[in-house]
Amino acid sequence: MRISVSHISKSYKQVKALHDISFEVKPNEIFGLIGPDGAGKTTLFRILTTLLFPDKGNATVADFDVITEYKQIRNSVGYMPGKFSLYQDLTVEENLTFFATIFGTTIEENYDLIKDIYIQIAPFKDRRAGKLSGGMKQKLALCCALIHKPKVLFLDEPTTGVDPVSRKEFWEMLKRLQQKNITILVSTPYMDEASLCDRIALIQDGKILEIDTPEAIVNQYPKQIYNIRANKMYQLIQYVKAYEFNHSVYPFGTYVHYTDRRPDFNPEDLKRYLASKNIFDVEIKKTEATIEDTFMELARK
Image 1 (cartoon, rainbow, N blue to C red):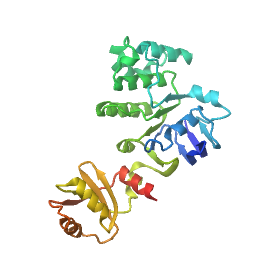
Image 2 (cartoon, rainbow, N blue to C red):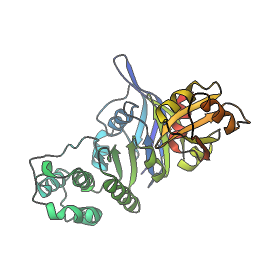
Image 3 (cartoon, rainbow, N blue to C red):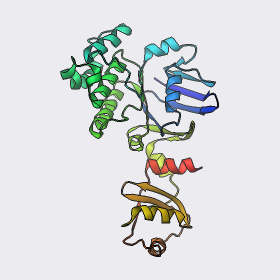
Image 4 (tube, helix red, strand yellow):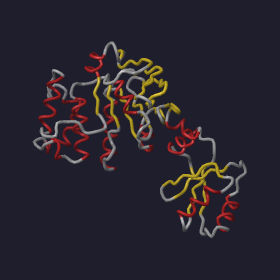
């Protein structure tokens, strides 16, 4: 089912959390809202799940208006907030049963939807939710969000604080859910997860920077990026930032991502400059842009 957001704005006193946000999520699409903490992702999710009213604009979820038809939306969506919010003193099975009962259904009735996830936590069904590992809590929360067979699934930073293996498993589960005609809107601060979405919106300071497929967003990066590494990385970063021709300098793993303002940049010029600063054994090589590079470039504007 479609999600439509049109000119949504929201402020908390003097802080403007969302500035004129507009986008659409297509039916059965995995749409990613990508941005750092404080970008406005959670505020937008709370508006779309009818927990907050927008100051301006309008939105529909599964063809229902978020203000006038909030009851229909609450019956049609599943919401997994960023913070684990299930009943920690209840067991895995008791939490599932509780949420199924709220929506007038049973675990058995919609078991086919959660089966692939539930079988991973079934061995711990009698364990209290508060005693589960981070990855198991994540799977339980997803089961509870799906137990009433929602048309739209909202996942607010679902993999934050979860180990890499559990993150990979989680995204594999989302791909399988997509095949079951569920529209998924997921937010994440992890730029590497953007490539797992069908389309993404990059958001910063409550503003949408760009909306497109991950591939199209990366392809629009305007400059050649170079990986730079040397024997003194901290000093390297300081001197490259002070280099008169630098356009951008960002630490990236074991390298520094560098772009130059000149169209005819010669790496040997930079090496000579660094040698004058006693930075030797410098490695400079071309590399491909990433979502993170594109985000940083758009955020500069």
